[in-house]
Length: 394
Image (tube, rainbow, N blue to C red; front, top):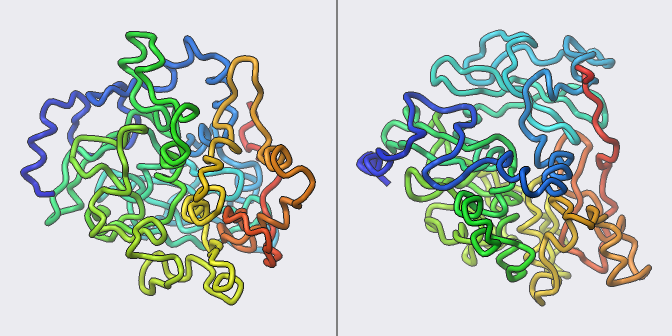
């Protein structure tokens, strides 16, 4: 992937000087944005807007959590809140925050990075459950580290391996929009035909889950570096100028020799540790794991790597969306994931015991495991259960 590949994007209408830190609208890849879907799919759009997929990235006024705003200077334990940028070390204030990331579990804060024109994280995150400030040390531009899964239609516009700081990116919209799961919608908008859009509900279990797995996975990328020249933790399309298209692309096959994705790459089992990487101590390797062959996550966003170990996946019983509803459909409400377990197993299993919180997402805060071990012995830790409250009330 060399600098010469940039010539391939000359026809893209969204190309601009510098990195594009905000949505750039319809693209040459056929992404039209979620608002275009609303016109015909009102029930789906309305219920999607209420999900956390639609609330991952927001402006300060739209998304600042009440607890964080009230305790910005310091929390009730006396711990100071965010004061500086992680990359440049410069002082920043609340009013400097451009975007907030997350809400249910934790929240992080993005300010400008003058050196690149991108966004950098501040030095603290807000723990939504324990209502406290915690150190956060991510020292890479958001656009070149996290944005493939914090946005829809993300693509590199240019990339020089010898100068990753100069890379340019664009995205069709912030958050996990309709087209993140259904693929580009321009052709469907024009024709109105269902066949012109990917429908996970009509796809194979493997293919449907693959869409979720693109983001609900922990990986380390040596093919593309961040603007700070570190391995990325996401996976842009291998061709500069193109983006992941649900139902069309198999990201598992993208430059596998330059990706670390334990459990997904057959040569990289979850039964092995990967020190000096982001996958260090990522999965439990203890006696329970060895006996069961099921390695629960020790870090967050590893659900896909857990799920593909399960008999649910291996026996082609379930896809992710059989239990999790990204949106409702006309005449049918959002499903309750816990209730879907009872639909097949009745009262045989206690979901809280089968799916304890094992993946750490913040201090003493954990996300549920998805290995579905019927002999699960882990107790698990606290999980987020309460809906967020916001500082700037609407």
